[in-house]
Structure formats: C-alpha cells, structure tokens
Length: 194
Image 1 (cartoon, one colour):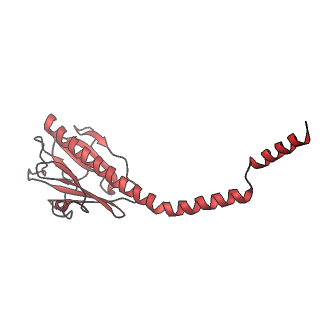
Image 2 (cartoon, rainbow, N blue to C red):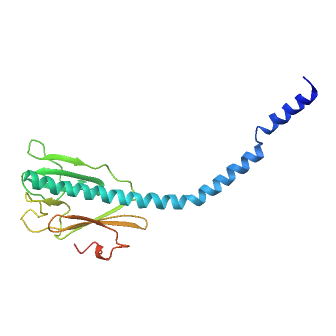
Image 3 (cartoon, rainbow, N blue to C red):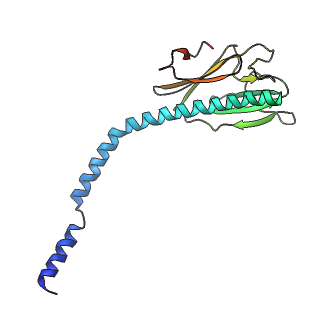
C-alpha cells in the first residue's frame, strides 16, 4: 500500500463520524423544536380525547337504548362509582326495576352488567345535567325511551371538557343521542337546557 491510499483512507474515516460539538448543536436544536411543539401536541391530545370520549359515551347510550327496546327490559347508563361521578367511567346494566341513581349491580338479583368503560384521565372534566333533579343516570324503559323510575320523560346532557375543547352528548326525551360541539353548533345549547 502506498502513502496515497493510506491518506485517502484516513480522510474517509475522519469524515464518517460527527464531533461532540456537532452532536450537541443538533440535540439543542431538537430540544428547542420540541419545546415549541409541546403546546400544539398537548392541544391535539386534549381535542382527540374529548372527541373519543364523547363518541364512546354516545355509543354506550345508543347500545342502552337498543338493548332496552330489543330485550324489553330497563337499561341504565350511569357513573361506575357514584362517589367519583362520571370521571370514574360509566357502566351499562340492566335491572328488573327502574333506577335513577348510580348503583352497583346487586349480587343475587337479576341485575346484569353489560358494559363498563375504563376510568378517564384526570385532565378531562365531566358534568351531567338531567331534566329531573337528583338524577345522575340515564334509564331506558322497555320501549326504548329515556324515563325516570316513575315513568316521567327524562333527558340529559353530558358535557365533556379538556382545556378549550368541549363536546356535549345530548339525550332527548325519546332516548336519541346526539354529539355536538358548542363552539360550532348553535343548537348545542349550554348544557343546562336538556
């Protein structure tokens, strides 16, 4: 091997790596870009979380209505844990008699748990307002309409919010479910006008 070949090999070997200074500069630039991208990423995550939770709750309410109508039984959709409210998730269950408050399914009864949602992340807020005071559960009569335990019509609105993002799941007296965005839909209401 001649000296020219060795010189060319050392030049190529030197150009293959990066220096510590170059690596530090690239990492610093990436860190700065990550800091600027963080608020947008967090905002995107909040928006998607609210949309997904609203759709999941609307699906659970539609399942409750269809189950009540098809099996001709009382079906209830309420908070999984009464003390924690809707942020603990929700449960869909059937009972022989109507209920208007969140309650665990009782053992040795005809109560059947159909579906349970997982608990929700702490940064999401829930507010449920029904047309009847003291009611925190949507109950569907055997005909598929939302009703109270004494047969009176029942409607409700579950507001799901995280940061600036809000969705409302509205359930009318016929038990139909609608998801709306109060920022873009004027018919969405304020949440207290079920």
